[in-house]
Length: 267
Length: 293
Image (tube, rainbow over the protein chains, first blue to last red):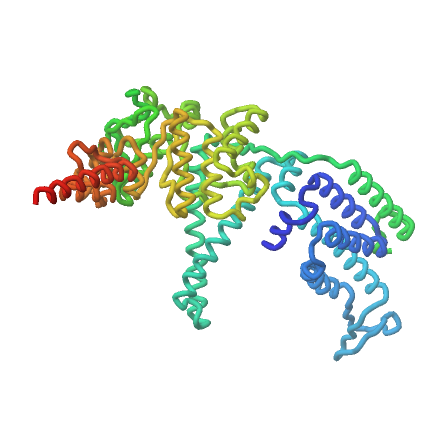
């Protein structure tokens, strides 16, 4: 997670208008989710990989590593869709199957297609989100949400949570270091004990921090609403044209290959 | 310039468990002055500062700002906090935003300024604290010294009349500490009242024009730095060392190495001046003694 965050500040698309990146990611994801064509989903995955690696300059090995995480979750998830178990097996409907006692376990043709469809679609959508989070700092994503009139409470919570994740992680790291320098994790048993101490003292410190924060915020005239400046960005016409062209191409591909933009997975 | 800007009269503050953090404390800070608060940990310095800004309300007694009693209704508090800013000791408790720009703009927006003016205040505060190049950086990737400067810019952007620094040089390397003290001097020359707390007697001695020594929630002594730091009783009470400058000055004076009429030095340069003058004086004395022989 911290790695994604540091890329968000150091990639080559950092200074691009966050609205453009948001629109690109959101539009591509919409097409990917609305279309039933596997080719489109695959195209979206490749397009985003290209954008992240070639445009944003994130090393492809890192990107591949990041993608394996959702991919492995997805594989496990769609396995349950692909595999079917029945008591009265009808072997002719199965692509391959085997018998375990009175059950027949196997994979049916149409289920496999559904599973592959779900897998590719989810992977495509995930890579859209990866594109956004690898190229755009959360602070800027939050300002877009603010412009889109998301509820203030939600936005303020989101930005405070984001800031204090790092404070919390730093505190946890310090406690861990001080514990292990006193052999707190020498054996499994005292490792568990130290961990429990770490967690409980994190809770206490979090409470203390939140009290301190409310003091320091009120010291600066906080009256219940957090208002802050936004960084100004220039809109690039070229980028907007590129985004529109790409989205039109994707939509055309989806229509041509899938026959429609409405999901037909069950047909 | 003898007008007082912040006053506490018979202030008492009790925590919920009944322990007294401040006991019957009365003092006054001069407008445009440079006041330093010294005293051991737990002497009540930070608690007192929180009273000056209206974060804490005295259990008894009253706090006065610019001659008027502080009132604790919403509008009066906002007005007080516009004028009295606190830079807290640990920047991590103060920085709430992941963006430096957003962080610094928080205060001016709360003061109700329009966006253009906020931008201007933020730019000026960032220039004064030399953090303009950190504008786009996330706060969690900053070093401690950078965070400290951002937390100072937070308050400068609000342009208060009084700025309180709670241990501004704690945990800073010598170079940064010097730059922070430079900034404090600039603020003071610009007409602001600057208050700080510190454990560094040498720093307090050469920087401040008035010193308060606190102990157990009370003022153990106050006065000009020259007199406070030569008052052994007060220093012993608050477990303070004598500044090295006064230590050396005292020793030289005792051994007769200083010219009669040499004033108590405030900076090492002043002390060196006396010493070098005295060296030629001493040299002359030696020559005289030789010629007599």
